[in-house]
Length: 132
Ligand SMILES: *[C@@H]1O[C@H](CO)[C@@H](O)[C@H](O)[C@H]1NC(C)=O
Ligand SMILES: *[C@@H]1O[C@H](CO)[C@@H](O)[C@H](O)[C@H]1NC(C)=O
Ligand SMILES: *[C@@H]1O[C@H](CO)[C@@H](O)[C@H](O)[C@H]1NC(C)=O
Ligand SMILES: *[C@@H]1O[C@H](CO)[C@@H](O)[C@H](O)[C@H]1NC(C)=O
Image (cartoon, rainbow, N blue to C red):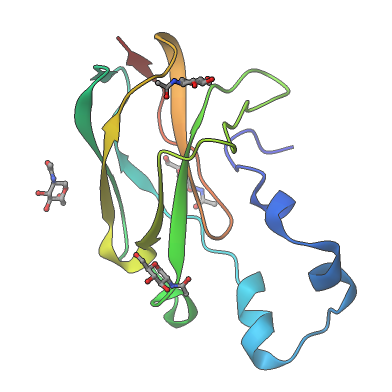
């Protein structure tokens, strides 16, 4: 199992899986693109009750994803579990093609070893950072 790939496949409904192969418009949802998250960088610190900005590389965004929205979730990856906080996304409904999303960070656990996961497709975890 690849530790760095978020389990975005969880978002794929059984209906989607069972209806595969799909007509072109739906098949697009299966195109895997794991954007490279550029910030936060390793060992960054996010302070609670501040605005944070996550950025990712869009230079390799596939045509099919230009108009897709993403969801950003907090993770705290351990060896066998990424601990994605799917119930409380940090941000959602932002265009993947923009390459960044700003949001207000509040009401989270402080500590080390956090990462963010950009969903909307196959996700890629960021480097580990600290919430203080
Ligand atoms: C995920 O990001 C890392 C760097 O953070 C990169 O080396 C790796 O290729 C990316 N994975 C995919 C599938 O894009
Ligand atoms: C977030 O990053 C983007 C891209 O680098 C930048 O344009 C924007 O001003 C940044 N926002 C904040 C609040 O730093
Ligand atoms: C993407 O999010 C915007 C709001 O930011 C919303 O208006 C739009 O309908 C969403 N698009 C899709 C394809 O879900
Ligand atoms: C803070 O988050 C917890 C869940 O982790 C939730 O139960 C609580 O209502 C939240 N408080 C506020 C003020 O949003």
